[in-house]
Length: 298
Image 1 (tube, one colour):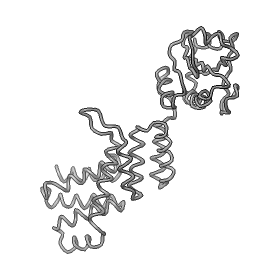
Image 2 (cartoon, rainbow, N blue to C red):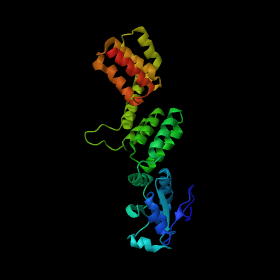
Image 3 (cartoon, rainbow, N blue to C red):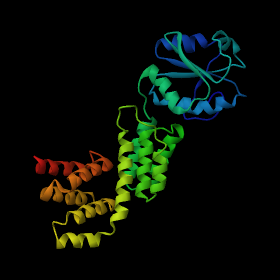
Image 4 (cartoon, rainbow, N blue to C red):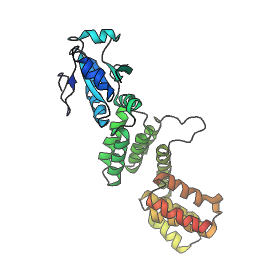
């Protein structure tokens, strides 16, 4: 990059006192221009630079970025009352409209830009999508790395917490999953937990149940001997879910509902709803089982 703070994929223009009018005031008539006030001796400036440039790139050309070395060009910073760096001032239509001081994390930088120009590309939403795709393909390590990247920037990102906790459950690390879920922010008063957190909590609960019901073979034998042994069929459903056999698990619970929907205070229906929450409402197994449940219920 032009000022020597560090190399990036996109060069950022240096602005001087002489070029400030053209490069900032005039240019901001077309789109917002960020001015990053920095100095070569400023450590936090070096931390801010890459994250700021990435966020600007993710704006897709909606905002421009220039940099001003205050050691070489102190006049503009002085006129704007800047007393510490790094400092970023946004100009729009020739006027300073917003700004911040200090090396903010990327999530806050993105929030700053989104107040100016609306949603950006990239960011945690895209990383979440990548992580979910990696997990669906069986790449648990890749998914975990992406979730960890999000949490390094925003430790309270509920989707990342929930996603990583579910990976821990799948790996059999229930204590780690519980510890991670304990870091999730509490929902606002009167609000339900975030869907990702609720799904992870349900997954932990199912894993705990599965550890108590034992192996599949004895349960399958019990059900074959007595199709009305609803407890055995219920435990079989829990064990099947733990093995990843979602359709079979749902079908076992649906069979209990067909035979005796009121059994054990509607335990089969309640367990099925817990499976939906753990799997996700739009999971193919959830969709298929909901359709079957509707046919039974109505």
